[in-house]
Length: 197
Image (cartoon, rainbow, N blue to C red; front, side):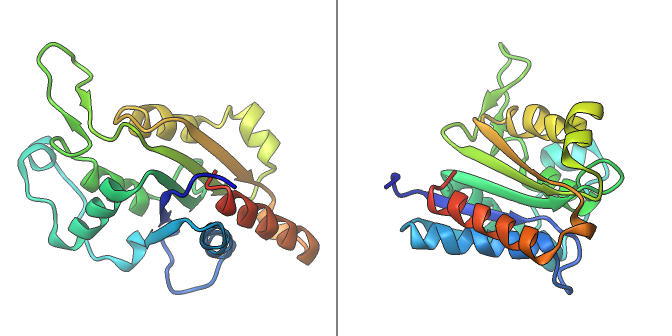
């Protein structure tokens, strides 16, 4: 039995109105986590109405939109973050990127440090898992494309603010999954949730 953890699931699919595999995988993870005795919260950026940042000045000195304050509090509360999103044009959807830009602001996600150009990491002590669905085979994305956008998210966003380790679950060929493969993925995510992995 693993240690009980506080888990935040960030459902990054931009279409909150229709069911999709990423949503089912997130539900399976949450169910498994609750079965394992972990505390679970969920944030769905697509259900929140927030503006995109348009300047460095706004990012550094503007106020966090009030609708995102609970999400930022949930990130502070969490010991483990699990981000679910589909690969769109080789990257995370713009809405998820816009959400991360808003919540990962100076003073929260990192702190200015004149002696360290990378800043003091504000979210250390947290781990993460990325669950990415895609139309191409996961092995092609991982080895031919070198999982470039996932690596960018791991290194330049999560790693920059101190979140580590970051693990990946890549689900490829989603349009061709039969029911048996779909159920196998749901079972895998349920187990990951139970283990808070």
